[in-house]
Length: 142
Image 1 (cartoon, rainbow, N blue to C red):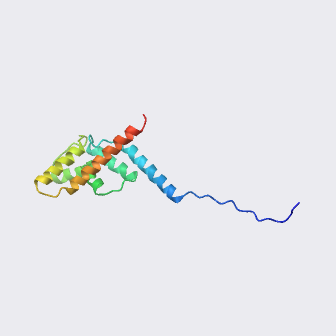
Image 2: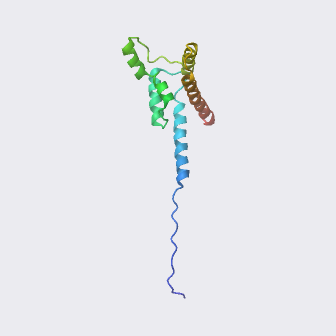
Image 3: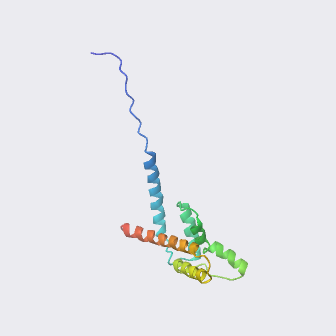
């Protein structure tokens, strides 16, 4: 019997692939955001719901960019401030079609020969939210 001491090879430690982990985290955040989008309908949403929607999206990882700020400007918090400044009351529970509202604002800007790019970008954002919600609902079995 051979009693010569032998070097034992250490079992290599397998660490999670950082790229794979990053993609998994991104996919999980996207899934969380898509699920969240099904709770709100940009075609039928009130100022109160817009505040909740913006807050929930930010918590889910949606960057607070120009489009998010434009959406927030139709929320209760901003409209409350505007009502105080102008003295014009509004009803925070009335639901509107944000896509129609944005199209109307774009049309006003176009008639005034003003830039419409911001409204065009906002409309694309709203359509993406609507499409992602529709696609998630279609792909997810009930």
